[in-house]
Length: 105
Image 1 (cartoon, rainbow, N blue to C red):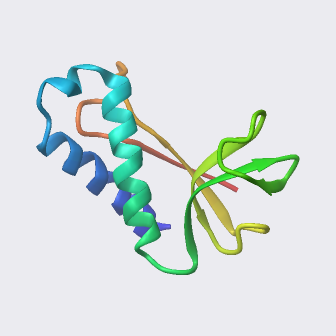
Image 2 (spheres, one colour):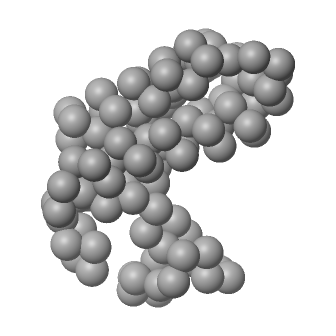
Image 3 (cartoon, rainbow, N blue to C red):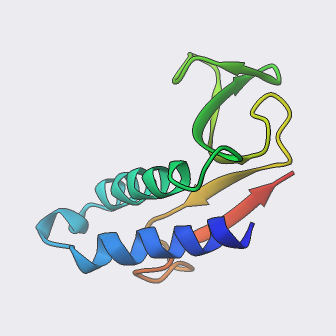
């Protein structure tokens, strides 16, 4: 899990280091952080997966209506050891350059 935690902060730092006018829009910043995080997660190898959709506890096609999508999954996607939901944005409790990393069992 530490690997994914570090990737979350690396992704946010990478996006913020290349920030131009687009980063004034929090949803664009968040989308870019999620994209960079997914690329880095996929590069870790076979135990790590990115953007897996689930509905009724089953793996579903990406973006299926009514599904939820885990930002990262560790282990077998059909029976993961844990999943990660990455939170990004400019909220009063999240400073610029920081992403909240939350592991869901």
